[in-house]
Image (cartoon, rainbow, N blue to C red; front, side, top):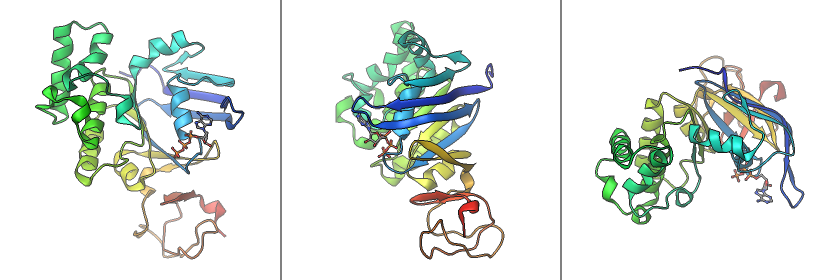
Length: 270
Ligand SMILES: Nc1ncnc2c1ncn2[C@@H]1O[C@H](COP(=O)(O)OP(=O)(O)OP(=O)(O)O)[C@@H](O)[C@H]1O
C-alpha cells in the first residue's frame, strides 16, 4: 500500500547536543516509499544522531520532520508514529528486555492492542518466517550476540512496521548470521534505511546509498557501486586516484562510488 510518496522528509534541521556540539546544521534528507537505502559515513558524522531524530528520541532545534506525510511536532506525534517505524538498535540489549524470546517478540503486537493469543500467534509466525523456529522458549539474555540481533529484528517485524531503521546491524556478527540477515532483508517487502560501515553488506541489501560527512549528505548513489578493495569496474580502463588518497588506482566506469573508508564523486578526482 502506497499512501505517501515519502516515508521521511527532513527539511533543514539542525541539532546540537546539550554540551553544545552541533552535529547537524540545515540538514535535509528524504527516503521515499519503497526505497531500500544505506547510510555510510565516518565515525562521528552524525548517522546515529539522525536515526534518533527520525525516531523522535532527540528533538531538532530547527527545521521540520515529516513522516508518512505527517508533520512531527511533539512527542505525541512520534508516539503515534513509532509503531510504524521499526528501529533495530545497534546494541541488541537495548531491544530485548523480557525473560523469553516469545515474550520479547509478542511485546510489540500486545502493545498495539492484540490479544495475548493473537500476539503469541504473530510472534510464532514471525520467528518461523525468519527461520527461528524453536527460539520462542529460549531465554533472551542467554542468546548469543548474533541470535540476539536476529531476535531483535523479529521483535520489530512482529509489529509490521512501514519502514525499518537498522543501526549497524552486522557489528560483531559471524558470516553465517550476517548472511542470514542479508536473506531476511532481501525477502522483505518494506522500505529500510541501514546505517553501516560494511560496504559489501550494503551492496547486497540496498539499492541506494547516502554518504554522510560532518553532518551533511555529501554523496548519493547506486549501492551496486559500493565495494571494498578488490574489484573491476564494468566499463573503462582509466586509472584514477581516490580523492587525494594516494595510489589506489584501478579501472572504473566513471560512476560516483564508495570504497572502504571513504566515498567520492568523480568531480573530486584530479
Ligand atoms: N549524547 C551525546 N552527547 C554529546 N555528544 C554526542 C552524544 N552522542 C553523540 N555525540 C557526538 O555527536 C557526533 C555524532 O555522533 P553519532 O553517534 O551520531 O555519529 P555516527 O556517525 O553514528 O558515528 P559512529 O559511526 O561512530 O557510530 C559525535 O561527534 C559524537 O561524539
